[in-house]
Length: 224
Image 1: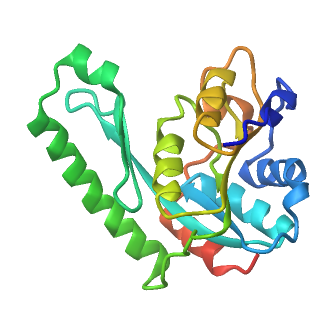
Image 2 (image 1 turned 120 degrees about the vertical axis):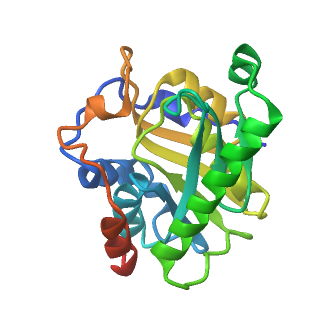
């Protein structure tokens, strides 16, 4: 697999007005893909969909939503022990599992619960519209940012199993360490901003409101 280092050329710090502006900036970084045949942009729900819409619009690409659900530790749901992606792909954090002695039954219960929510959102967002097929396509996976990279890694592995031509991870912000790890499995990683003092995705946004289901549906229904 090719190992380009495009993300290392991105600026270290940048602020975005909102996700839509971040998407337009990201689209400029991806301009070489504009008009490419078989180009598919997948926005990770929910925050990646506004970013992905702008990318798809600028690149004249097909847009669809891709779902990834964090698998929270039973006692502390905000702490991720892994991630679950559309199509059933699962990535687990073995360090968290071993350090907290989480049982197989606990893991299964969380996976079952998040699978049900993932399937509910799939239906709510698409309303019966078929899932875009990544097979043989150049797929750009977009989110509003990455922190640990677990959710994006789950998405990369799930899409890879469907047989795309290539996978590009594209985000407005993330730490260099997570981008480097993703580059081990994606064909390229584009990160528009990598603050040296990275703490959270929201730190580079003026408006980082919670994207709701209605906003996702509206964007998916709007032609790119």
